[in-house]
Every structure is written in structure tokens, then in C-alpha cells.
Image (cartoon, rainbow, N blue to C red; front, top):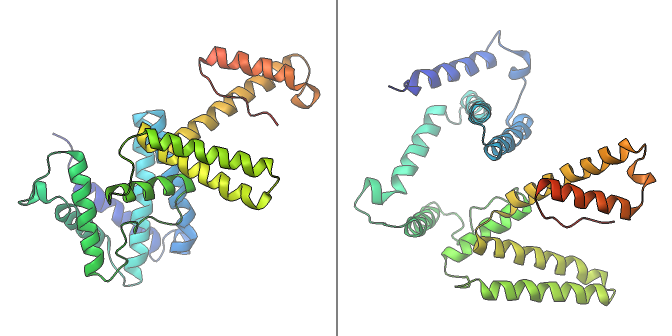
Length: 272
């Protein structure tokens, strides 16, 4: 049988309390929620990286590091008399039960889309009861990366019924935004270029939903491909006793195409 997590979790909470307590770790004792906030973000991204790598051992370790951040913040809140880790656990358990009436109650939902619609309706009701913003777009943090935030906002708008039914008009919208950006560039109107570029990006994020990709993840993957291929160019040039600055664009472009062939991919070179 799998090991019961309860005692292990209690041990982690006790370790954190000791680190923060009298005679504990000087570094841990002087931290505040704001001082360790960057670590929470960093650990989150390391979890995402481990998921992308698909290595279970690393994912297990990174999830532990992320869990530590949750316990750390809860310990500081307990010291300030705000809440305890037990309150956190109770709150998320109650929320999961409350938002899954089709599992724990008399509700009915047979598809994932029905579940999401019910989830959003319950969240909206909770916000209204608590006197919070009741907009269908509420609940998306401003601190999310821009692509991810746009994706989440578009998802929420879609669940409220504000969406195209098929992909064709989405493609048309992307082409329209591309034409408007080209027009702004041709007119030499810098005041229009920024907004038009933003509209194009927003349209591409919308398209990503319809083709089933996460824009943040695929852009990250494309960036990693660019890094690998540029490193290939640097290494190949170094064997010739040259650096990129000492080479021609045509020479580097040929090496880029060679890197693409060896990798079996297809990304357009980002020429200066």
C-alpha cells in the first residue's frame, strides 16, 4: 500500500516551524512573504520545466520545492495570527467539494465542458456572495505572463458565450490584424505599430485555443529551438576559427538550415 502522506506532511510543517522558531535558521527567520515571493515564482517555473522534460524524479523534487513555499508562507501567516496551514488545507478541500457537485452532490455533468461551465458559474456565485468583482473575466492575475493571461481571459470570455464557433473567422481575424500591422509599418506611423502588434499577438493567442496549443509553452519551445540552433552555428563557426560577428549572414543562414535538417524541425531564422 502507498505510504500515508499525513505524517510526512506534519513532519514538513514541524520542520518549517523549527526553522522559523527560536534557535532556528537565521536566514529563514528573517524572511517575509514579500522577500520569498520571487522564490515561489521561480519554483513554479522549475515545476513547469520538469513537466516539459518528462522526468519523474525531477518533477518529484521540484514539486517538493514548490510545496515548501506553500508551507513557508502558511507558517509566516500563522506567526502573524492570520491563518494556519490547517486553514489552507480545509479551505481547498471545501472548495473542491463545493465546485464538484456532480461528484459530491446531486449535480450532473457528463463532459469536461459541462464541468468547466459549472465551475465558472459556482465561482461567479461565490464572488457575488463575497461582494467581489462579478465579471466573467475576474480571477485572472495581472502578474501572469502576458501570453498566458491573454489565453486565460479568452477562455473565460468563451465560457461566457463570447467566442467564435469555428476556427475560420479566427484565422480571418489574424490575417486582418496582420494587414493592419503592415499598413501601420508602411505608413511609418510608430504610434499605431505598438497597438497593432499587440492586436496581432492577441489574435494569435486566440487562434492557439482553437488549434489546441498553449501559447506560453509553444513559444518557450520555439525559443529553446532557437537557442539550440544558434549554439550549433556558434560551434560550427568556432571550428573554422570564426565568431558570428566575423561571419556573413549568408554563412550563418546555411548553418541554420543545417541545424534544422539535423534536428528535423522547421523554424524560420530570426535574421537581424
